[in-house]
Length: 347
Image (cartoon, rainbow, N blue to C red; front, side):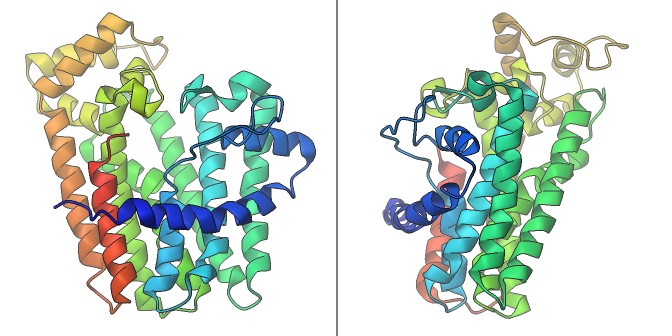
């Protein structure tokens, strides 16, 4: 299945609508925080001077707008939801870079490496608060419900991040535990993005839940692809060093599946990624040679293939969720096309 040629146009349309609203939201921030935030989203350099920015794909805001349209409402009703979800997403990225000690994102130095850990934490916190302000001011009737949905999704995302960090110190992580962590860490926010426009449009609960389930499974597919890119992605396209997840000994889907496979290759991979008994997560990053060897072992143990299969299975489940309720035809098709686009993306 191949996405239609219209997906880039759908994303561009969404970015054009969300951009001014996002700019208006960021303009409300304290000047010091705004300088950090606009740098993070790629609009300015470290000194606050505007720069040309290609911007991201804008998948989350697009899902928010399409969910309003799919619920037979004007896409504009989904704009506050799109802005809010994008603000929370960027809050999580800023904090993730601190946690992972990543110094590069999208071919630019990360916020904490430019401004320091303190300003980065404060900027991330400010974006999360701003997201709820945007929603609560968007609609007297439905803003509170949308804010509550975003709060629930954010809480799940944070819990998933906590599990991800805890996994680094655990010798044994099951495939089921890894999938549950990914569902929370990535699926919850995409589920919110895919339904928040419908909430703001006053859609029936069944419609909201179908769209949320679509987004949650899309999130699992998204995370599976992201985990594959974290090991085998092209740095020129991902903006991160090759094998970045392996370098940090992350127990991502491919790694956990490979460790569960058993055999000599799996045992060797365990010694590389997990380390000897008693290491307790205190090991440093893998060397480039160790990263290369670990990537080979993950693939040899079937971790790469298993993750690709899981991505496709969650895509199918996401598409099935869209069939549970009657949605407006054009946004229904565009939601399906975006799901395929996410699975087949190269960066």
